[in-house]
Image (cartoon, rainbow, N blue to C red; front, side, top):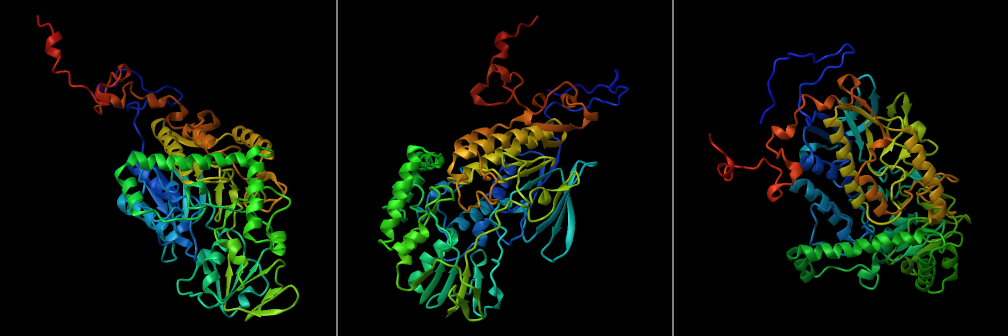
Length: 577
């Protein structure tokens, strides 16, 4: 059925200038989307645009030369995920043959690169292209994006919607250490581990006792001549996440029989995955101050660390926190780390060295040590300040967030910044569990917002100031009841004295919240001379001309939303004259 093709015998434009658009209700206008990042978020976005998007022109710029984000960049020895492998994948393409319970970085990279190849997503990505500036052009309702290509030349692109899928673990930098670049041996950062560096038999200084430092030290300790390591601040070293499903709290390899079962019985594989995910979700309880769960995990972790340190009081005093509970910092799974500290080829310092020299370092007492390599496991800039200018309404987000990202909304939007969305911005549920369910939920949310913009001819969508302020008021008060507000140094709390930059609730709450956007929290600017009902168009719907069922409200025959063929019953009820 098609809409009538009538010549206008009636007025279609009024004195104000509003004109009825001659289009059907449900028409999807074309929208250009630019995103940055070829990590998990970018891959998920590309897949959803390909599978569920219509009339969306998507371009994704990635500064690196490959896919998988942090798993493309991080190649240091021992690099692996602390989340069980079956829960660190995307639901639309589960892998059933993970080699280990906690997957290595190369296997994770292989999985996400494989998704790009399997689903033909390469066409959306422009590798070795770095976004260096973004500016909102309010008169055009578009973003102008400045990009530096692989040849070093800069060019500009424009879009209706700009999505930041670059993540927070991408801005690494050398630590500010006296004499660091005077060192004549091998100097490397865990975020850019050199392919040609062979650590075996070497004397190695490992600076940093966070996740990467812990993994590097535990992995290379049996293979090096000597390790020098510094522990400047205490931290809770726990067993791996979901450890009751691992082998005695450690990693293990899946058997061929298990892989075969997961492959041949998808129901069983899904149930196994859900079982582990359920345990991860329950971990949020130990973050709440004063709960029995928090008390239990504190007692267990304290006892377990003391046992693994075999009564070494010097290390116990240096490592086990006294002033904050488990969860104040992200708990660090450290298989083999505490045990490695006790080995004779590991020298642990509790005071920072004085400086780096050409041959090694000078410790706090003035003694010089010679080493072959200095490894900086000093992490990333986790301040959430964008690494390039993002300018809207004359304000740069870099400046607005120079002290603290106070105006973020649900980790996905920023006040005064139209048509700009973020994956895992400030105040995301980063405190426990896997990131992949949140990435999928945010992707669905962004796709719904984009579709609303398409169908209703919305030119710009901006989070209301009051909505962002109300969210942050609730967030700040709620987080006082959590371990994240404790007195520890943590990337959950990059600014001392300010509220932690995490979500005020668990992952289940976040997923339910963002799955269905709160439309009332947004301000909209419409086309059609500003008339929000212009999208009603010519009074007909796309449903009536694209073959869908025009009596859908009675229910669908055989579950199919398509116009039924009535030829089989029409003769029974048609009365000819």
